[in-house]
Image (tube, rainbow, N blue to C red; front, side, top):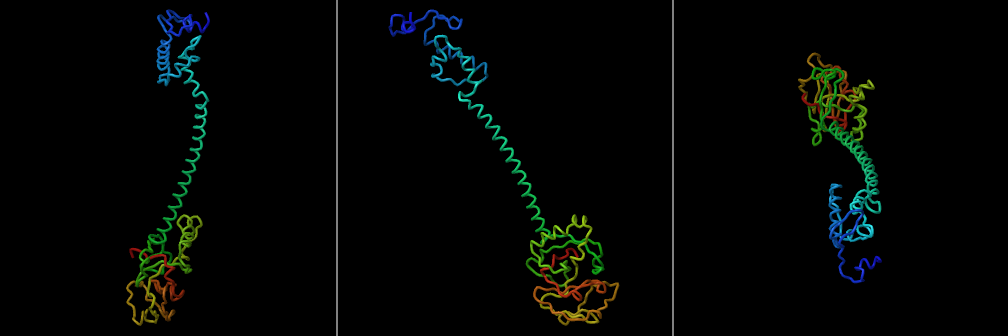
Amino acid sequence: MSDNEFRKGGDGSDNDLEIEKVSFSGSDVEEFDVDGAFSDASDAVAAAEDTAGVDVPISEDIIADEDKVIGDDMVDASKYLNSIYEDGDADGSADDDESGVESRGGKRGAKNVGKEILSWILTFLIAFIVAIIINAYFFRVSKVSGDSMLKTFTSGQTVFLSRAPYIFSEPKYGDVVVFDREQVHRNILVEVKESLQYNIITLSITKKSDAHKYWIKRVIGVPGDTIEIKADGVYRNGVLLTENYVNPDEVPNYSRNIGKWEVGEGQLFVMGDNRNHSSDSRVIGLITINSVLGKVLGQ
């Protein structure tokens, strides 16, 4: 009997074929018809799910594919379904995706390292800029060198100063200020340069002192004042000053520096409290307000 005749019931009719007993790879199935193959395929799917531990997505197309599920020799459905999970997609996309994930993962790791390094650099720069601003305008530490401010301040004493009081106003009579002896015009670039050059760490390494750079004195005259030094004392706008901050241990000798100074706009006349041992505006002349680093706090 030919294959076609077998499929049509031997007599060529298209009636449903009833099979009493058919052998499938050595297994006997009783009272089984063609439509029953679908139930066996479903059983094979269930067995594959139990073995793989996952749900097997299967469509009617897979069940009906005679070349894969039912044919002359009946392909083992469970082996076929297991091969799907072992081999991945038919076009090998599973392996490609895995290698793609590894490749992308490596790139992500490199990007993360780069971002972290950039983050640290930006953090350092921001911290440095903030430190410069604080040091230049709000809070600064300095140390007195010499005896020109006795007995208000002694040599080696640490003082704290701030430029904040002078952001919206100018120095006043009696303020003790620290200023740049070289009369350098203060700006952010100068602050950055000097913060790198004149700080505790740099000075400890170079063993240098910034005493020649920054001086500490008291404001005696402001813009518009006339300061006159006479043998008996200091006159401001023709009035003899009463100065209870002057070192009481020595009587000031003003005869060496008799003179008269007109304080112009943006200028100050400054003097040390230890008058006999101070190089101040009597010697170096008027200083600029812009050269002032700040007012000494807590005096």
